[in-house]
Structure formats: structure tokens, C-alpha cells
Length: 259
Image: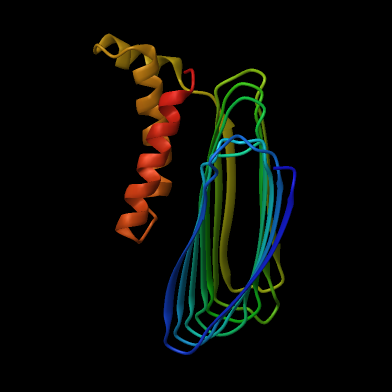
């Protein structure tokens, strides 16, 4: 309680290796602390790093996570973020695709209520040709919560044949909630396929009425629509056990909020 925790993590994957890493936060009580973690990953030729960042702790803590990734030839970096927990989380991910056919996939869910404030900032740098990146972030906000997503795809002039994709979608379920989105493309090559998009809105009342006319309560109807909205992101998880864990944590959380 009332502590500052500083962590540094350095992981280097040799050629043709793979690692699945689960970054799981758990707290036994509603304590207040500041957690500052720096991650540095090097993914060498033909290697795969799958990282799952799961924070479902409902406490008064403040969390800052900075991740820097250097990816080399034919490597794959996957990062899934489940951001349900404490008062404040700020995640920053900087991924450098440095050689042929390196790939980066970042997918995440933010589910916020009360006075929570969560931020996600990504910066994907395509520095070589034939590299691929994909980002899909979905958020649900209730009460007085505040969410931010800032995503950038940078394409160097030598990074021809780049394939970059970025999409953010948010559901605002309270007039007092706020979501800020800033998708960015900075492209200096001419033979690329890049796109970005951002949408923010509330649940369609006609959909709620339809489900309630079929016998569901309003809470059940809202829950079904939210689950369907976020399921697209959960389906991107490539580890079955993690997919099951994320689904369980999300469903348990949604049961506790007022819809």
C-alpha cells in the first residue's frame, strides 16, 4: 500500500524460437500504489512472441507500462491487452519492424466504469519492405469513465509492400463517459496498403427493444450486445486457454456493473 513499484523486463528470442508470456495483475485488497514497468523485447529471425497483458484488478492503483519491440526477419509479435481494472492505466507500445516479413498484431479491450481512466498508445514503425501490422481496439465505457486510444502507423520510404491496418471502436453507455481516439498514418512509401478507422457511439435502442421483445430483460439485452461487440477482439486470441480466461474475466466483470 502506498508504494512505488519499478520493474524492468528484458526478453530476447533467438532464431526460430517461440514464447507465450502472460502479464497478469492480481491484488488481494483495494490498495493504492503506483506500478511502473518497462518491457524490452527482441524477436529474432523466424521467432514468435505472444504477450497477453491482463489487468482485471479493481483497486485504486496507478499503472504505467511501456513496451519496446524490435522485430527481425519473418518474426511475429502478438500483444493482447485486457484493460478492466484499476483507476488508471497507461499502456504504450512501440514496435519496430526492421527486416523482411516481420509482423505485429495488437488487439485489446477496455471496459471501464465509475471514474476509471485508461489509455493505450501504439506506434508501429514499418522500417523495411514486406512487413505487416494490424491493430483492433474495442472499448466500452460507463458512468464517469474516460478512455483514450492513440495509434500510429509509420511507413519509412524504403518500406514498400507494407500492409498496415488499424481500427478503434467504442460504445459509450453514459452521457458522462468520454472516449478520445486519434488514429494516425505517416507514409513515405508509395507501394503500400494502409487503412485506419475510428467510430464512437451508443447502443441502438431498436436492438434493445428487439431483444426485450423476445423475453430478455434490459440488462440481459445490453449484456448480449456488448458481448457480441467485443467478441471480435476476443476471437483474435490464438491461445485457447487465454481466450477462455479472458472470456471468464470479462463476463464476471459485466455482471457487476449497472447496465
